[in-house]
Length: 108
Image 1 (cartoon, rainbow, N blue to C red):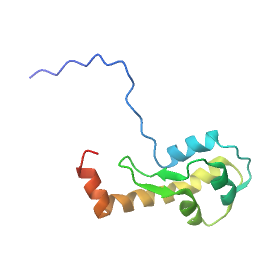
Image 2 (tube, rainbow, N blue to C red; image 1 turned 45 degrees about the vertical axis):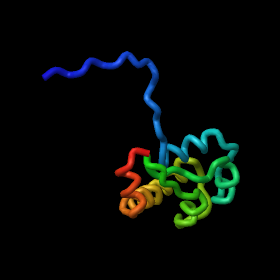
Image 3 (cartoon, helix red, strand yellow; image 1 turned 60 degrees about the vertical axis):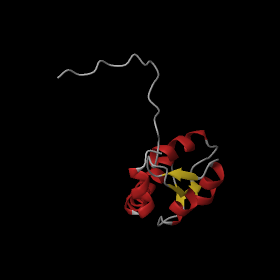
């Protein structure tokens, strides 16, 4: 058995950012100064619907921030570190939902 030769495609594969990576990319372009409150973060981010997985499930940024034990963040890395478990939990919940399972089966 032989392996199929690589295709001569020069374009880069499309990268789908979700969770912390998606939020970090949006924060990089946002006009925000730290320390910042949850309200400051939401106001500075243009699109607050953050994808949590590659199948299109999302969480509203304000909803994720409401799940945190504090409302003010000294720097961006602190904000992202605190949000990481929230996004992971949301991703797990989406994967086990009926809609999440259907999305995983269908090539959408």
